[in-house]
Image (cartoon, helix red, strand yellow):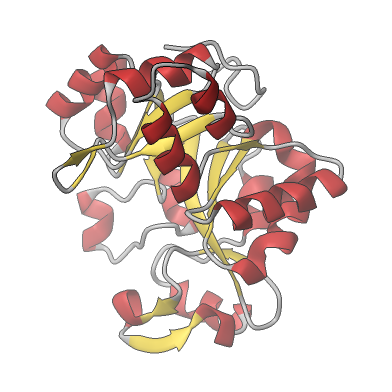
Length: 260
């Protein structure tokens, strides 16, 4: 475990349990409740989760909504992209599926919750940054694109907030390579502007979580969170290795496993 500097981590339980797209229990799924819905966030809150991981896109009329996919194909069999749909229509679609949550609504409705927001679209970057700025102490921003992540952070800073952030693909790849080198300087450079690394334990046959990467991140005060882990045995194994957080679809099970 490391000692974090950003307020996002202070005063929270460790290891971190991050509810991946909120919490949708098997019973909720049978009722048709969807991930990233208002109900999924509420369920995570009710279970005692401190951190919710979610994603955001920009609608046709400029609202930042909590939604993972770029289009409606997987969830609704509709090929239209979120960027082509106005928020009112999304609200109608989600009405019986747990309710649509905009980024602003999520932050305002759950003032005690800490949010991990993955910005999925370039168009959402500046607007998302402005929205999270007043809540910066309880927001971590991330994106697979480090260029996008930095745009969101810059927008938040211009608006007066300094959220935490987690590295994207370039940061993860460069820090993994740098951790194999004999000197610490390259790792410090790779992790210079992040507060966390959020990674899978493996990518195919390639191990991403390595003892050297974990040790290097911790020396620099950077937390390491592993996604997406639903097996209790694997949760215990990773925590025993020293990871700082578990991103999971079953936050209720993780609380029982790691807090019991």
